[in-house]
Length: 278
Image 1 (cartoon, rainbow, N blue to C red):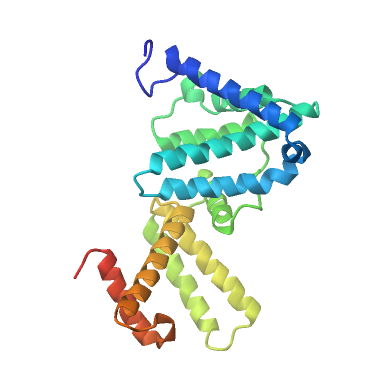
Image 2 (spheres, helix red, strand yellow):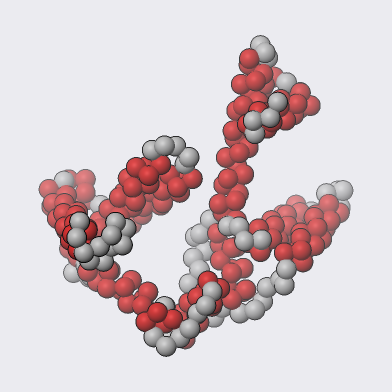
């Protein structure tokens, strides 16, 4: 390869190969929309559920620890990329916009939101970049309000995380993670008081939501991603329960038939086994 190092991109044979493969995918999309009865029938609204599915499959691939991880990620990125091409082709056939318009739009947006690279602004840290990003959206792009353009269709944890990030971008945030931990403890006590029988279902529902919101804020404040942290925890829980059931089965016992205290014993054994402890 000449003109660039592997991974550099932007010039040379690698850039030409990228452009060639993207053109091939565009041509294939055109062919599918013209010749395949199923593809020809689909609208953007019809395939949005498939697009969301591809996003979640990509998240699974990214979390994978398998040796084939890179190939899995590559495949899932391709699936997601095709969704973009397909939607743009539908719009092109309807005379609304085409893939080039889509690319130009995101290109210009990214240039506009990185004035520390393409203009006179300065940003020394990642947090500086985030503040600049939000400021450009509010001023240059005319986004009104602190919580502009946050889709309510987001999963609840992501929706809460985005709201908290936007509030933090204008200075409305806890000073330290320990302050949020105290808020979590406060919300936990309030919920505990309602669980003694004095709280209505609505009150318990609201306090449980407040507690969860505070926990998500704490996770964000310690620098973790709430959605990914919860996902990882859920996967660990699944692995431990499955291992507990396997350990019980090895000893001729049925995990689902046990009392809770016995299940907990096997669960703790499973935790130690999965950590490589005796």
